[in-house]
Image 1 (cartoon, helix red, strand yellow):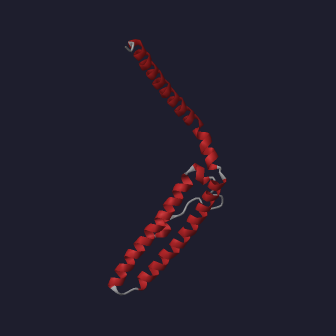
Image 2 (cartoon, helix red, strand yellow):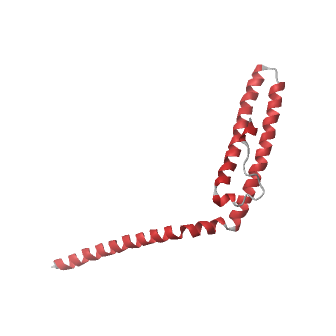
Image 3 (cartoon, rainbow, N blue to C red):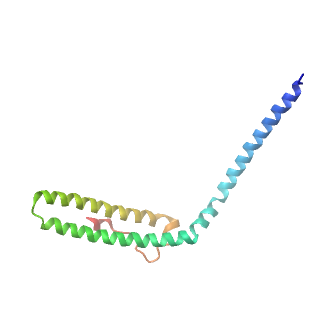
Length: 134
C-alpha cells in the first residue's frame, strides 16, 4: 500500500514549485519594469529608427505641401465650374482632399509631440498649419 506521507510530500513539492514559479514571474516582471527606460532609449537611438524618424518628418512635410497645393487647385476648379452637378462633385472631392490635408497635419503634430521622435525633426517645421487646408 502507498503510504499517505508520500502523497503529502508530493503535494508539498507541487506547492513549493508553484510558489517558486510565482516568485520567479514576479522577479521577472520587476526586472522588466526596471530596465524599460534603458530599452526605450536604446530602441530610440537605433540607426534605423533615427533615419525613419528623420525621413518621416521630411516626407509628411512634403506630402502636406503637395496637399495644400491640391486644395488650392480644387478651389480654382470649383470657382470656375458652372454646372451644378459638377460643382457638387467637386465640393465632395475638395472636402476629401481637405480632410486628407488636415490628417497629415495631425499626424505630423502627433509625431512632433513625441519625445522619442521630435528629437529627429532637425530643421523641419515645428508644426504644420492645418488652416492652410481650408
